Image 1 (cartoon, rainbow, N blue to C red):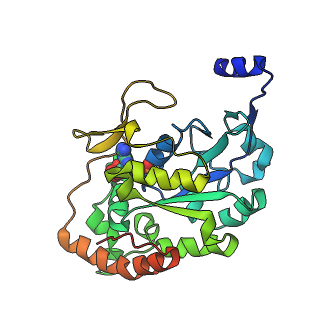
Image 2: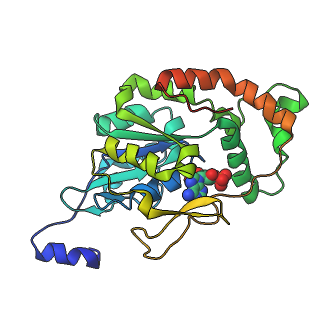
Image 3: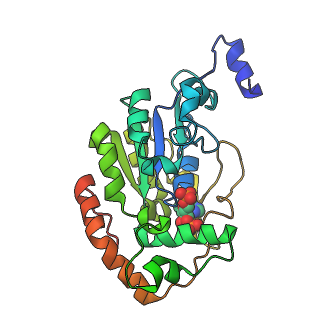
Length: 271
Ligand code: A3P
């Protein structure tokens, strides 16, 4: 057990590992790390540190395996896990429902065009010989958008959401705006805390805006008591993309975005 739990042990309180009662299921590059780091400031929330990938890669290992990857919690604390690939994993909704039909699902979404560029920026940082974004967006040098390319496919949120709605009512999902989490983290965190049924403890007092990084950062967190921002891999500079390609992509996503707004009842205002 962690030393900090020794005190509770002495008081007769036994910390235990529990399966999550809330999941951040996506979307990749939507701001999932920021959302998790912000919500875990809350004393009633404990989170698995890294992405466990249970419902996509490790499902055959069973729920006990998953539970062992969860942090220790005390009575009244909830366990949260985030793995962004759950959102697009075909079997995930059914598997999650089997584990806990009343689980709370958080989805942080972002303009699919900037999300695609963010995804590409991450990919090229690992594989610098990659072709340009502008080339990869189109099918074999044509003007047809390559919807089988991951960074594009993933932004068709309505398609993936449909699969979750087969298993869960809309009220069990909370959609967080990735854009608003940057501009006004406290407002989004208030919605999240209400949804999780916990007191609104994480407020504007926890954040400061770091103008060099261009993102909100934390005065302190569960792990660090000094002011800090998320790591270097969060909030990268994006490459310049041909504006005509951006326009083409915006036109491509518009009907899918409208469908997503309709399904969620929220207009995210993406251009
Ligand atoms: P970029 O690096 O492309 O700017 P994820 O954690 O899901 O991989 O999402 C990464 C994205 O989170 C970043 O994409 C960034 O835009 C966004 N983000 C939101 N809040 C942030 C914060 N406070 N600090 C850094 N990045 C943040």
